[in-house]
Length: 446
Ligand code: BES
Ligand code: ZN
Ligand code: ZN
Image (cartoon, helix red, strand yellow):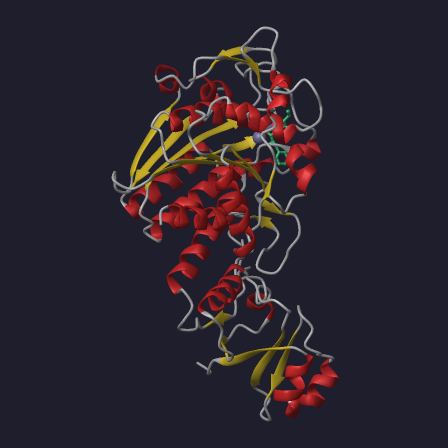
């Protein structure tokens, strides 16, 4: 095994001051220390002597994010020293950039370059955050034929076994008996029965945090069938559930002192003779009736029953994550998840943490005047707005009907998918906002 290779972060001035002996090589390679570039510097024998990496003005999680898959598959170390916080960020970015999804390709896994973690980096966090992120990416990337409600349930079983959590799953007709009519209605048209996954972990004396994730393993749109183009990506419609599982894993791995509950309604929104129909009116767990204005607005239906159950135990904080609306993507694009929150102090904390963690969010308002757009002529509420604007907001307002006003609540509407590769974030499934939510919870219980 060859020795670890040093990595130096340099800008144009640093090159002149510290690496002048390599000037000729740097000139022929065209390396000038620009951020986003790097240069492999050989020694006299033709081995790698060192790596120079262009240093941005501000170091962040993504500074080394491209290196794991661009450098030769050897072991490296950081030659400069950094604050513990920066070292942790740099190492995490490297690790996140090692991810490849090659389960379905023969012999495709490329060995990735390894970085020795500096002593002052928070090694436990780097490992746990990378593993949690990889879990989310794997769950989202896996094609639906291998990621159906049963497999989401398997994921919860594995988490429960690994971290000694308690797991309960309510399935099929039992959802009706135990009063989850909306989860049942959305999932009943599929050959795999709908289910509510309910995992509990932690001490009863700790603050109670309940996480809820939209687990629509595939969203055809139901009888309001999606176009081919819109349906294509819908294996990622369990991205909220994946993110919640990743977040739960991170919380349990890092032993954050919370009383955790995870609720994931897992269904497929399918087309069949027993599928829910447009303008069906259904009861909800809360007791109010819901008119199905559009069967493609299924995520809010399953979340409604799960959120009402979440609030029944008066937790200190409820967070739901969902690939809920195309409208949120129109508003903010695909890379910036939206969140809504019924408490201003929690919202500003999450915004601040998002910036610090390089895992940003943008807040959208729970604008109450738009609640009127959800009025139904025959039922207590409709699952769609009768206007065509502000769809992310009206979806959030629908959910708010199923959250008790005194429960602090964050609703995240995310893409869960990188349409393009960025440093540390390969194209495909992504845990957008997960690390920020983790940090919020960690600070919340302090
Ligand atoms: N899963 C979709 C939302 C979605 C689409 C998220 C594309 C990310 C990317 C959701 O179930 C849905 O179909 N929503 C509809 C709601 C409409 C019928 C009120 C939408 O956004 O068009
Ligand atoms: Zn839908
Ligand atoms: Zn959906």
